[in-house]
Image (cartoon, rainbow, N blue to C red; front, side, top):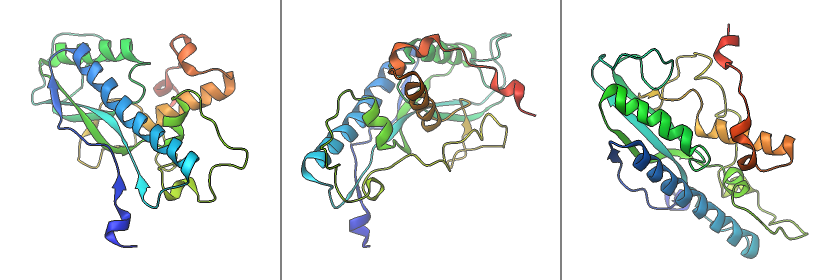
Length: 222
């Protein structure tokens, strides 16, 4: 394949922005996620109607970053809402509108405890098309299927090799840019769990996710 044929069609990636308020940061995360997911749904709908394009189509999760240079924080006994040492931290975010209240609380505590703003932008982690389409409402699939070409030839699809629990399992996980994880699970891992919840409950996770109680995963890791 030539370099030109390997190029992917993708939405624009704006520069990272700093936010000193949690609400504004979450609204930006929502905007970026909806832009990426909407782009994928639009291109997928077009592929259903007109056939697969000859180029790759890709969009990326939004990302939240925090950089702190000192150990000092406000006194807190919480087990969340702060990082344990200076450094660069980041995490990819999915479905921020679903987790709005949770994100506002967590980001607000980070800003309060470390007295630094957070940065929000577009990551380099692609959104699998299955997750984007699943959260986009109705989709009409022709009886004969979509097209003869494999989805993974054009779109990113879920990869179990990258959907794992390496962070929470304490395997010394670090992102490619050297930043430490800001959350115990990546956006792809959360999307995978939301898809499983919807599958097992036969109901969109929007309707019940806030009522799901998760076990203390770390407690059961040797």
